[in-house]
Picture (cartoon, rainbow, N blue to C red):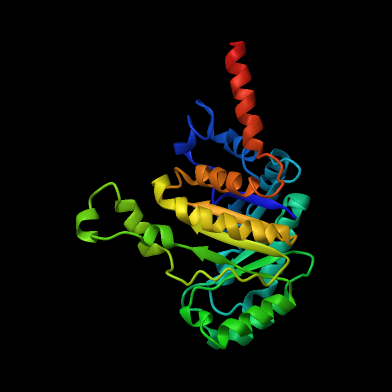
Length: 292
């Protein structure tokens, strides 16, 4: 049983002076991030495969127990059939293997156009995936959530011990009066809502790990009820021995780390969990402040 929690990125200047110490340089963002949270959704690999030296540097910064969860490149997931890119996917796995024990589940995000009509293509791809590396799969075509496609996908994933990604965009959909909100402080929220899929939230587990992406509201109070709901579910899963990977987003990601901490504390109140590294990092900053 493990509970890994993190954000979609680590390189964000808006966290300097709050999540990161004042004066933190971009070169130190990864180090500071891994001193606070325990996983990261590796969106950067969707756009480019990092070179060996970059991976070596990342591995050196990441402490033991931290997990990097890379998204498969769009050249694999968004350009033609998946089966036509099996070799590219296997090459990507070999590259990411350089992270060793820091490599968590990898993440295949399929485009909205990828429908159950391509089930055989998906099956061929998943059948070829190396069993030594965990994989989470996110589908965005609504037909995947209807019977019999929903059950067929779950069965396929379960046979391979692969997770079905759950993406929760409810927090950014709880808005009314778009005309008034346009041009306001909520503009980024509306843009994020338009870009994220509106999919059913069905937290069914198809593997011995769960992979959840929570797209939070930029105002903390709007997340309270949903975080409480997720905490109840996660407590139940952890008590069954499930390994959890949970990622908190927000439209500008400014409060994403704080959503992580809030949720982790809610869960830790009911099941025994180690403290977040964040707690030790805050203690270090407090002690340094007392010394100087």
